[in-house]
Length: 119
Image (cartoon, rainbow, N blue to C red):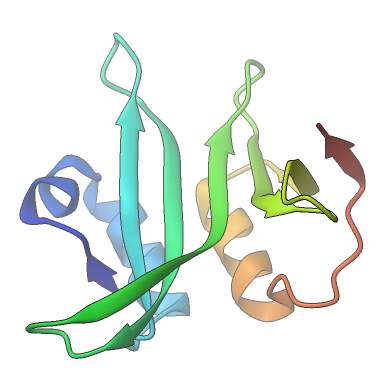
């Protein structure tokens, strides 16, 4: 797992970094966005596909978001879907961040049917 910058690596709690590294151990994927709320809890982690060198030029392409919901579960979603790339597809809700990461690693996003679509 790559991180777009060192601050993102430091911002994520160790248990979240461990889950990401366990299920995405190669440099083919990277964390491109980490957002927290006013209380300092992580609310969104965006994962991209990474192509190219770890040092130097590489291309990062959106893969999925892991987003905390109001009730504390984690939503697995993917942006830029649909005919005009204006939709967000929801693939599931999980009790823990680790469960959402595991599901993403096992099932991926390719040819996956959403349970909800937001426009």
